[in-house]
Length: 173
Image (tube, rainbow, N blue to C red; front, side, top):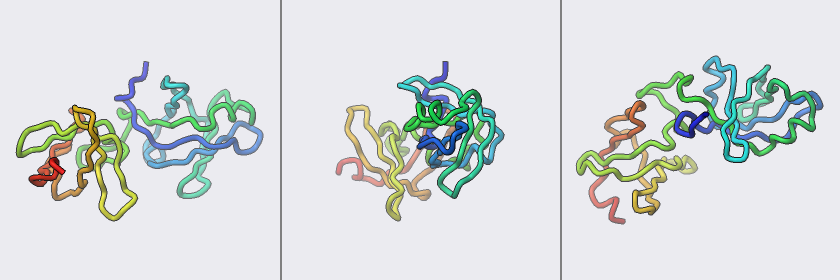
């Protein structure tokens, strides 16, 4: 069984393309193009299921046309429209120094000066010039933390933890 901790989201499936089972895949991370992977993981009604790829090709910078094994018709492909697509962490070419923002979703955020666990990173907001970690605290509150390289002291992929020097008073806002 595939656990959510073992994968990270890299996009979402769109509409079928053509009549032979190809489907549009809107990507948010191109790791599967950098790394040889035989399969991607789809979220099918809350269950993570591996789907083996026959082939894929880039339509543009944000979209890929993918053909999965045993999906040979437009009707079959249509069943997967809207499914979120995940990539197995163990196949990623990333390390502590070079990780995509998608890979750190689910990491714990620790404030180095206090040693306190701030919470879990749920999302990275890159819609503005200043990146923000959207963090859920152990109490269930949502806080925004600047995702500045100057503040990040350590990224530990094994522990799924980011240690930061969070500016004093920021957590009290």
